Length: 197
Image (cartoon, rainbow, N blue to C red; front, side):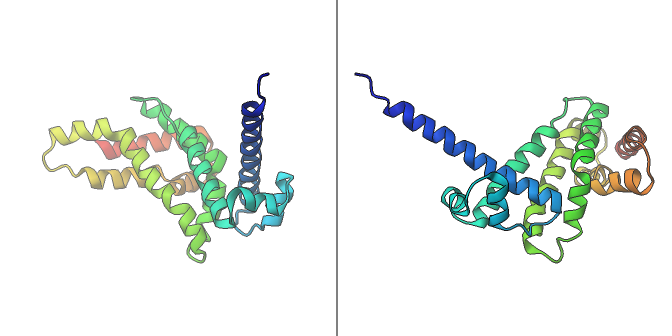
């Protein structure tokens, strides 16, 4: 007689992973809708269709759930911002689509980070990620310029490129000026190209 135990254990593990995923997604949705970390475990449980005890059984604490949600969010952002190598125009288009999807939420969170240590902790990895993204995107151009110009400061140039491609640059052009995505794209391309020349 064949045992069903391995199948049962696999089914339970799959069910547990699906439940944990629903809980994490519930927290991400609530935080995104409210542009705030002021979300209770009761609210998360209700959105996920589980009990608070189930949330705690999966994650142990609200902080652990938040850490997991941050990791999931970071992975989603990395996927959204994945760009075609060697094509600055397309890469900036990818970045702008990311800002169209998440920019207003990010700006809302940034507006509160000075008053809320938890928000500051959530937002800090995004700054590091954006700088690394810029360094990856512009790396070949920076290396070419460094080879040609002995006085070239790559770190300073990356700072300028970070500013030119930051969510606040998007806000100034898209939200404050009311420009189209295409117009923002053209201006950001001109700005980054000018920095590199």
